[in-house]
Image 1 (spheres, rainbow, N blue to C red):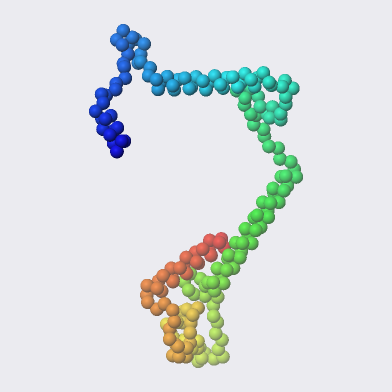
Image 2 (tube, helix red, strand yellow; image 1 turned 30 degrees about the horizontal axis):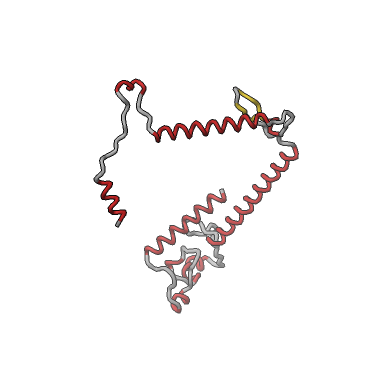
Length: 207
């Protein structure tokens, strides 16, 4: 309650205003307040302490003092500047760096070869159109067998699956088991797109 009364009493007090610079002293600028004086005095004392510490350091300095940084520093326009030294590479270091470069290139080559082999094993060495690169040759004894030859009948599969070189089940398998995996058109397009992407990646790595 006492704090509330004090606040109420202060609210009725007369407003305190800082005294301004008298008219005949306007040419001296603004009148310095106590807070301005404190800032100026603190800054002055800080600078005096710094100068006192420098004088003490100069008086106590050993004229025979030496440290290795002196060999790399020179005085330029009153400022100490560190000389930039060029790194000299010895023949042994150069040979070691070249050996490391060769080892790194060999390591990347082996890793790239492994990636290519992995992609080839996943894609079963198929080309972009889903056709086998090598030709499948059938041999017959007579011309009559050649004329009566039917690829779907010989491979025991459906005519729609003849052009496929992967996942080509026989008619017996189609009759006994149900079709597994994606069957709708959207899923098949997505799978074909992913397979095409893998083929492009494989081609880039081989080239």
